[in-house]
Amino acid sequence: MAKAKNTEVVTNPTEVNQKVGIGDIEWTDFVLHQLSDDEKINGNPTTDGLRRVFEKVMNCSVIQSDSTVVQSPEPSNEKRASVVHSITWYDLSPETNEACKVKTVSGAADVYWGNCDKVYRNHPVAVAETRAEGRALRRAMRLRKVVAAEELAENIEDDISSDNVTKITNNQINFIDVLAKRLDINVPELLKTLSIDNTNIKNILHHDALTVIRELSSYQQRTDDIPNNVKGYLNNWSIS
Image 1 (tube, helix red, strand yellow):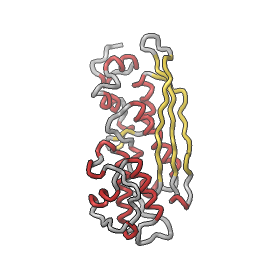
Image 2 (cartoon, rainbow, N blue to C red; image 1 turned 180 degrees about the horizontal axis):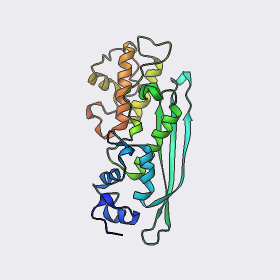
Image 3 (cartoon, rainbow, N blue to C red; image 1 turned 135 degrees about the vertical axis):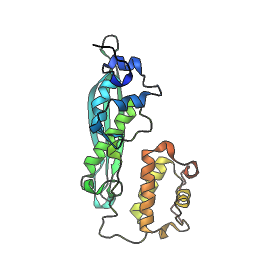
Image 4 (cartoon, rainbow, N blue to C red; image 1 turned 90 degrees about the vertical axis):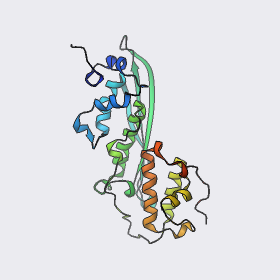
């Protein structure tokens, strides 16, 4: 077999690790170059594509890859589904190609009408499972500033509940609080940034609450780019 001239055409897992290491600055670009054009959407890798190249670029063998539904969609939780996906694999020795170390990584995702494309909003568990697997694969391969295609949503449905109201709902407040705490976000400062009056949280308009939720959801996909001025979770922010 002809010797590869650059990392983009290397196909042997052992050669992969010799050319570009997982800690090298070129690693993320190298992994993305292993994907075919139909395994990317607007430059973002699909979960299917990441799954295909995982064993190849990591020089490993997957033992188990499965999902656990930790929250099922119900009217009381705005039909939200939460899923955790775990991947277990063992590294292969570059010298003997034998198993040498077992590793496990997990990724989580929650999906509901506010962060899912309209066409998929009736299948939140399936979407959450795909997103969770994509996040697990990204974490396992230590990809930097990369979001799987399935994690993005462009055509989001407005609140689909029949009792849509003018003001912010308790479910929205609770969801904002969960995301803000998870991401260490100061909600009052975020509201200022979004030019939303935070004098009385209960008086925030329903569509403004949707704006806050979408902004927090976008931060989940780009944690490295969260502005410093909105960092620092504040307890009891929702109590006016």
